[in-house]
Amino acid sequence: MKLERRHAILGGVGLVAAGAGVIGLATRQPDETMETPTVVAADETEICLDADIAFLPGDQAGCFKRSEFAKWEAAPLVDPERGAIVVSMSHPTDASRDAAQCATCRDFRELRFDGWYASTSRDMRREAFFTRACGVLSALRGAEAATITYFGETGLEAGEVASLAADRLLRVGADPAAAPGDPEIVQTAPASWRISAGGQTVRIDEVALADFDGDNIAEILAVFITGPDDATARIADAALLEKDAAGAALTVTPLDSPSKNQAKNRI
Image (cartoon, rainbow, N blue to C red; front, side):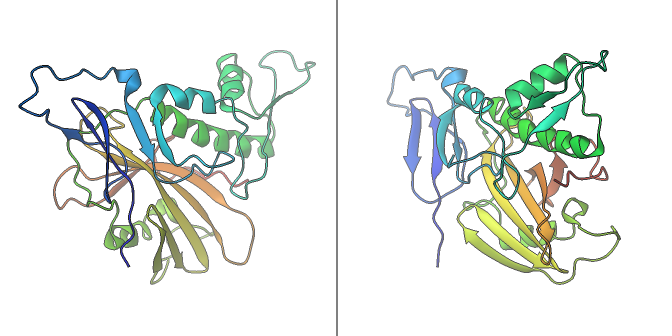
């Protein structure tokens, strides 16, 4: 059965809905019969989401102006089990001050800017979670329409998803060198996948396809929810999936880290 997904095209006359295709944005040349194409302001650029953002409550799938993502920064974050999550931040210089309780990206950024920090191991893990979650919103606010994409018309292909199973980003367990085994891969929705292997399950949500790094080539902004099958703990990660040439291998770049070897945020 073919899974259909929304396709948004940004052209000289605005945003046009199409049938099944890639999430996100691509550029269409203006109709040659039009004398003066309409210029679309940067803030009017719409980014289409084909999957809900796991860090936020409610439903987010749809098309939004970049300025609208700023409103989401005032929304309380949720953990991978959809429960409310709060990080306690300590004052940078006055240990006698009460800790500040932070539940939104807006509050988190303001506190971090003023030097507040997480002082316990529990809050450090939650601080890492906020860093990733807020990084997703920052990436969406800065996204541009891509003029080139090397992804297929339905986004990720099954073979590309299979290649992600071997990526260190998805590993769970004490031995990071352990092979995940032969993965079972299921496309559960037009923009969501499930990988099951080695006693763990990974959900991959293709949130949006756009230009996130300014090179005019489309990347997929993806959220990964990973956890062992016999426990409730989950790891939440966000990354850009990149293909910079036809036939190129898929690369994974975590949003918040220059290295994929950093510890993940276990809530």
